[in-house]
Image (tube, rainbow, N blue to C red; front, side, top):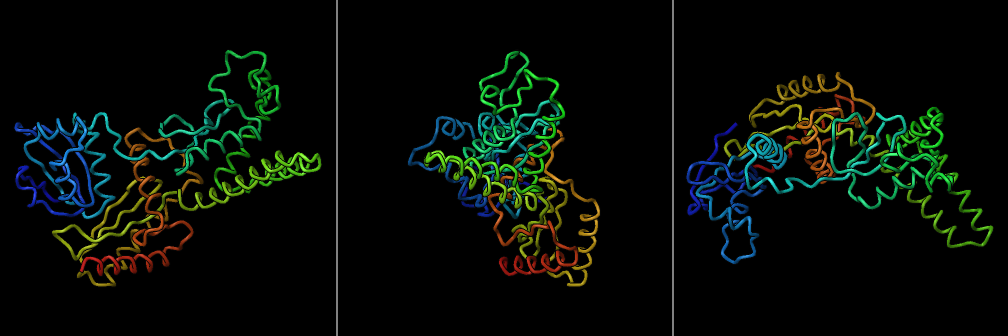
Length: 370
C-alpha cells in the first residue's frame, strides 16, 4: 500500500484529485475524522470553503484540524473498504455520529426461531437469521413482507409469548396463530419453506399468485371492482417481486469482479477486486506491460480457485459483525454500480468465458488510464 501523503490546510492544492481516503489530524497528530472520495482534492477543499453552509460539527472540525493526510487507492471501492476498516479501528471522534454509508434495506427471516417472522431491516446481525437483499425501495419491500406474511399465515408480531387467545390477524384468518395453536409447528414450517424458496428465486410464487387471481375474479363477479383492482395490483406487484428475486439469486450472490485502472503512481496497471458473498476476498494488481499469456494464466489460476469453493444457495449471513459491516458496504456499492461496464458478475459464467471477459475489461481499463 502507498504511504499517506500529508499537507497543511493552506497547501490543499498539492493534494491529488484521485480516488482515495483522507483523514484530518490536529496539532498533536490526533486523528479527528476519516472520509473517502473519488476526487480527494475537491472533497477536502469543500470543508474549508468560506461561503458558509457547514454544519456545527464541520465548523468544529475546521477549527481543530491542522493538517490532512490522504492515501490514493485507485478506485472508489478500495477507498470505501479502507475507510470502513480505518473507522472501525480508530473510532475518530468526528465520525461517531455519522452514517458512513447508505444502509440499504434487507428482508430478515428469523429461521432460528420456532415460528419465523419476515420483516424489513437495515442492520445485518450474525444471529442465525437469513437476510435477503439489498433492495432500493424500502416502503415497497416492507409492504411486500406484510403481504407475503398475510398470504402464508405467518406471524407479524415481535413477541407472541404473552398472547393466549389469538390476535386480530388470527381472527381474520391471516395468521396461523402460533400463540394459540402451538402444535402447528410442522404446518408453519411448511409455509416458511415456501417463503424461503420464493425469496431465493427458486419458486415463481405461482400458488400465491393463483390465490390472488381467484380473489380478483371473485371480487369482479360480485361487481366489487375496487377490491378486484386491489387484488390485481397485488398480483402484479408480487409477479414483479418474484422476477426481481430471480435476478437477486443470480446477482446478489455478490459473486463478482471489479476492474479499475491502477493508482496514480502506477497509472498503467490495473486493479482487480474479487468479491464473494458480499466480501472482498482478493485484490490483485497487474502491471500494464505484463504479457498477455502470463495475464491469462494468472486469471485462470485465480478463477479456478474461485469456482472450486462453490456458493451457498442464498445470501445467508452468519458472520462476525466486522464482516457483516463490510458485506453491508459492498452490497450497497454493488447495487449502485450493478450496470457499470467495470463490473463482471460471475454467476452462471464458465471459467473460460469469465477469463475472456476479464481480459476485455482489463484492456478497457488500460485505455481509460492512457
